[in-house]
Length: 457
Image 1: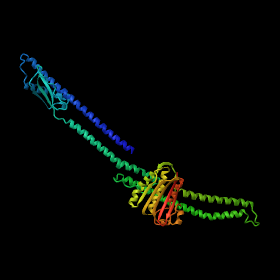
Image 2: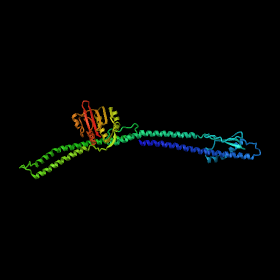
Image 3: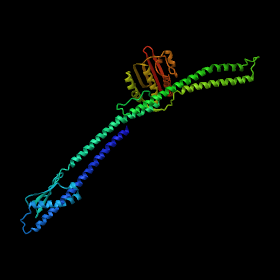
Image 4: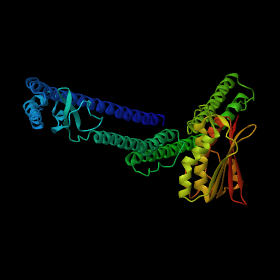
């Protein structure tokens, strides 16, 4: 999720840069246009003022005569119309005024300065004759809508920013966060930590992916089931062979012992050569017995593939694992449950191995329970950590409890339940691989099973 946070920051920075750059460019464009407008107005003004000054100079004999308003307007129109194309090419069409109008005023000694206000569309310039202001040139511009355009651009960028952030949040919640959880499933599946199928997400964006993963899960479980069956047949065959060989080997050892003691000699004395041969026969018989025992031990031990990897983690992580893997499943099955810890202690052990143990015990509690409830408590004591799983349901006979952790052994309460008798054997093998153990208690009266997992500190 750190990458998602960086994505949010990058999105905010990107739009901040876009808004800043767009406003800077917009301001530069407006200023450039305003400069062109000012230069154009100054050019028109200077041309008209020059004509007025020329007229004043030519009519110096009669200082009382004043140039008429109509004449000045004609000067303006004639110049503007004759120079309009050149002005347009030089300053751009947007710099041309809609209209240039002359407004006469009473001439006086009080000077009138340039009557322009910032952001005011009509620009006013004062004309003078013989040192007195005689009128105003008004450059009329239509509303170009630049201010509204600027506001519109910023509103659009703000809306795009909000939409982009919303999309990022949606992708984070609907895609990245669910996918982060989904990505952990293959790892857990490969470690045999979970047995339940991957649930479909609410938005169904990963339908085919989830379908493929569940199909892979089914295939792996079928292969494991088949491998367990073959392993069971293999162990059964070796056990049968071992028991079949046991009697002949015992007889061979007895015959070898009889020969070595001279039992079959007519005089009852030991024949040294025969005794040496009998010793070799006895030794070879012991080797055959040892080989058969080794084969049986290896066949049984190969059922569980576990190599501990010790790393520190908190008990709360085991509770989170149970919540994540079994809450929905138990709610669907309407089985009451509690997951409790008495202390969020740090555990230095193999988290994956303990999760496999809890998975096996939880699956058994669901399969063999009667649905009245499952209670799991995780805690730390002085000598180690205890994980207790209790459930009510079919309880095996008291005489069967010593064999409950044997490989491929199934109790009388498992006749109508699918399984191969390897789950508890695997759980205990892993616990013993972590220098711990699993203890079982059966309450026949209350029909309650309890498994206590012990892992030393």
